[in-house]
Image (tube, rainbow, N blue to C red; front, top):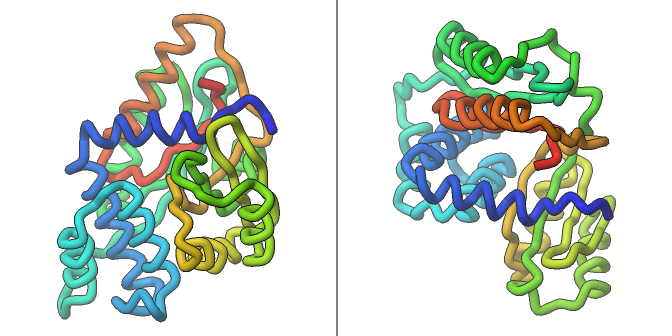
Length: 243
C-alpha cells in the first residue's frame, strides 16, 4: 500500500463539506435526480444507481427528508431538470493531472467557469483523454477501522466473496476496490452485513502521484481545486497531486 492515505483525504474532504453542507446537498440532489431518470425510476430496490446515490448522500449526512424530496422531484411529472454529464481534463502546475466531472443544465456557463478555475491557478484545459489515461476507474470503499468490528482477514473474505478485486489495509482504514460494474453489488453486500463505510463511490484513482515542492505551485493548484469544488455544476474533481 502506498503512503497515500485515502482515509485522510476523505476526512479532509468531509470537513470541507461540513462547512458547506447546503452546497454538497445540492450536488448530491442533482446526482439523485440523474440516477432516477437514467437508472430506471424512483425505486432504489430496482435502481442500483439510485441506491448508490442514496448511500453517498447518507455518508455525507444528508437528511432523509432531503433525499426523499430529491427523488420525488425527479420522478414528478413535468420535471424540467435535464442535466447533462460533461467531463473536462486538464493540467495544473508542474504537469499535475486534473479531471472534472460536471452535471449541468447550461454547458456554456459550466465550460466558462471550469476554464476560469484552471486559468486562475495557472493551469490549462486539455483535450478529452489527455490525462484520463493516468487514472484507473474503480469502485472504492473506505472503512474506518474504529467503526469496524471485523478483523482484516474476515473483512477481506467478505469483500472478495462479494466480488471485490482488491483489499488493502492502512494504519487507520481498510480500502476495497472493485470493477465499476461490480461496485453496487459489493457495496450492497457490505451494507447488508452491517459494515459501516466512511466512503463508497466509483472514482478515478491515479496510477502515480505528483509531489509539488514550490509554494507558488501549491498555492495555484489549491486555488484551482477550491474554485472547481465550489462550483455548483461540478460533481467531482480528481487529481494526482500528493497533498
